[in-house]
View 1 (cartoon, rainbow, N blue to C red):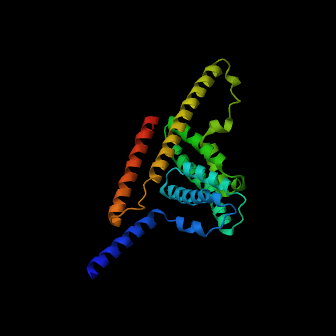
View 2: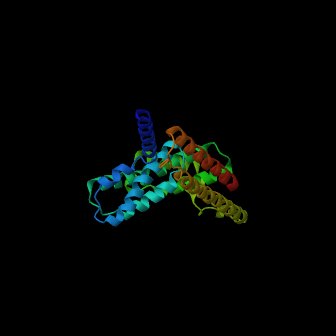
View 3: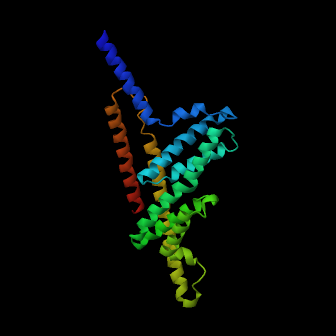
Length: 243
């Protein structure tokens, strides 16, 4: 009897360890007090999306969709006075209002510095969008100001705006029309890439090990296979956008 009992105990420990690895932040949620119990799903989303956004930032991937979800969950929890919830909300604002958009903007500005004209235009549009997502309380932070300076230096069109062009006479009309068409094309490509980022985030967030009844290695292999499939789908999606 001792052998089977040890085997059963080992299987239980492996299964519980696998579940813990896929849900690192969920254990902290029940300890937090909410003024309205109906907000519990928003709190759960906040914890999960905070972890997802930070993981995307650490991996050099787009955290945009996770940050959008994080901001929505934070708005639903606005006004809560529990110390733990308030700390989570402060952490969330730092991620969706500063760390997330800045990390992705810095990635795109680096790509723009070595890209072709078409890709550079699209990357510049993404950088501008990310800078617009930075919360007002972080606008004067040194890292933000430095990135704004790099953006204006690398993306002169954004700096000059659309107002100056009358000095070239009749040629300015066709030139401006061509530039507008190019901007529209690049915006479409940027929107397409953003949709790919969102689909990739949604796919990878479903790659969970929780509840598996096999060994940790088998669970890990299943999760890795799932994530590899998500990465492949993301590459196919972005290729269709023209990347």
